[in-house]
Image: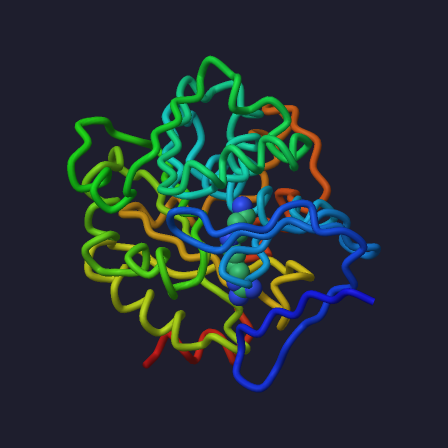
Amino acid sequence: MNRFQEILHKGYAQTFEVTKVLFHEKTEHQDLIIFETPTFGRVMALDNIVQVTTRDEFVYHEMMTHVPILAKGDVTNVLIIGGGDGGILREVLRHKSVEQATMVEIDASVVDLCQQHFADISDGAFDDPRTNLIIDDGVKFVAETKQRFDVIIVDSTDPIGPGEVLFTQSFYAGCHRCLTDGGVLVTQNGVPFFQGSEVVDTNRRMGKSFKDNGFYTAVVPTYIGGFMTLGWGCDDTAVRNVSVKVLQDRFQKANISTRYYTPEMHKASFALPPFISDLLAD
Ligand code: AG3
């Protein structure tokens, strides 16, 4: 039997049965593999770390997108950093209020190969006239762009390899620079059961740029280890504290069907167990 083993955390691994390898090559930036599995459907890994599976991608993509957009309300301009598979882009474009979704991805091959092998994930999002796809370095983009965004979603890899720069204080400062007043930054921030130092570091670094920063959670089965933390940065505390009632109203108006996100899950996702919230005191 063919297997794919991901070793991301010290002394622990997860293994998939592989029924077919569809693609495996080194791109200009990273090692990219796409394979079929009996349990999680089609899987894509970068530098041996699972990024997306057709079975559980909805959890991450819904929570990274609908939480900031519905918390903020009236969102017209969204920036996605990374996100080459197009899952975040798909969810962003489901909001009719969004006039433009700019996606800055460093690796053109990820976009091309995911369009070929994961057409259901982007679901036509790359052909939407509101999409502005830019192949470039996200750090450079946020430092230089004249555009302003209501929401920035950082859909990165882990802070190893090309993704590392997306976890720095200067990158968060760049994001802050190109947000509109009260705009929201969200980031993928690892699985704190194994990657607690990411919570400590991001909290400290984002805190330098944002008046209100913290984390919310989602449980993504293939990001093994329980809760994943999603980073939150905003200058307006009211955005994090928006009521369930307001969220319900916005969600209903948006008329989006979801499998993980609900206004109640949104609200609950900001509650942190002490093993995570204790990391914020460091
Ligand atoms: N990017 C986040 C992958 C995180 C993997 N890390 C982990 N398991 N701790 C996903 C890209 C999906 N669009």
